[in-house]
Length: 329
Image (cartoon, rainbow, N blue to C red; front, side):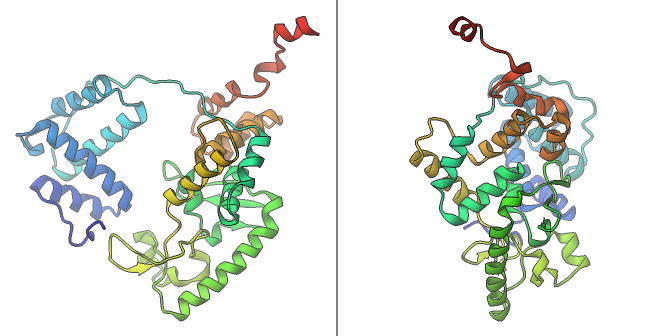
């Protein structure tokens, strides 16, 4: 069990300064854990010197080591860069200036995509609760944490819309909500109302809200619209406050369910929850949906990111026919 945030103020001076800066800005707990992990790796790289004595050249050298020796991916290097810039400039008040470091090499990876029959088989091997979650993820093109962090008010069943709040890059977007899921989502909400009533009767504290919302709307965590769409069965301890409350389902639970279902379905591919998002995009493009529309639904900043799916379509390009088929025909 990780220590409570109130009791975990860090050890070294630089770590305490980092924690104070992070919490002063109301960052998410997961962000704090990520930033602290990178700061610890940087401090180990510098040892026996302290991060207080580090310069922009030291940060650049560490980032170069990550790219050259550790061969990390560009997004991982960018995450490390953001964490260390925050540590040095915001927490330790050290001006880094211009930094010249070796950029991680971009590696183009083709996404794993399921056929429609494979998606159907995967869904058939999931237990009912996880199946509905997987159907929302595939039917709306969500990332894993976007799906898990859905709240009741993010659903618009009447208009067939789903609002993604605070997606990647802390951006909101609207995506499609499958019409076929409307009756089952209505039944799911009814079951959630019963659980909500039990929690209120048992005086369970309201669900977690971002710090700013919690201050502006105190008590909103105990209201119906803010409840998690996929709540955990058991109450969990909030790592920042120690309060036992209803949290959303943990990602590991859903990830394991997807892996088991893929194995039982006999799918000879590496299947993760994100495979459902890849399949959503590819199947839309195969069905003739404009790539700009798919970009908006996925929340991609650049259409170049969306174009990766054109390479894994069943008929890539403009319906090109293989020359071997021409010989056979």
